Image 1: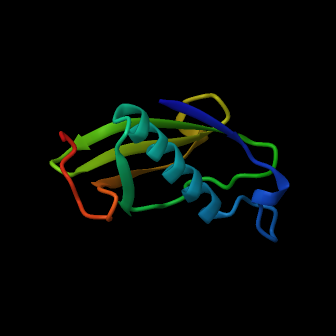
Image 2: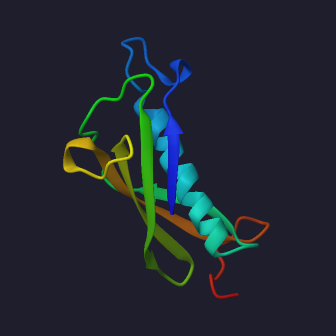
Length: 117
């Protein structure tokens, strides 16, 4: 799954760069959308992200490309790999970072349940 986001002034810190937390929010959101589209009617909560190390800074006006792919499926959990690039070119020089986002499927009471149910 591919998504894009335009970096606006409200996404910047006081130095004029994209807040890292804002970028993580988008990564979590786009991975959640992928899981929800792949498993309609299921409820997922984020339980973790792997190592996060930003490789490039991001300024206002940058268009970010988010590439999301399922990495692993367990009994109650899913993991998605998210790559983030600057602009619409998948070149190494535009690579921002990647991480794995892990979700667990839960019932209406917040208890883990099988993905297959």
